[in-house]
Image (spheres, one colour):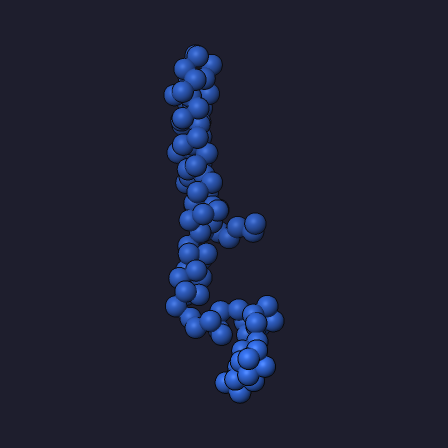
Length: 99
């Protein structure tokens, strides 16, 4: 994953808050408080991982825009994996051959 300047600043800001929390979580784990230590460690990891992978503004914007676009414009014009459409004449011929 390539990070731009703003992504690096955002990662640094996340790490400023997540590293002390992770440090405190490790101290609590060493003191024997397993639930608190693991819980805080999960929160510290989530503070870094969630903005980088799940809350990416570009990905959210692309998802919203692709939901608003018609189906023909979403996939770049490739409809190779979609079934071909049948005309009314073909459907009538198929119905007649079944009877």
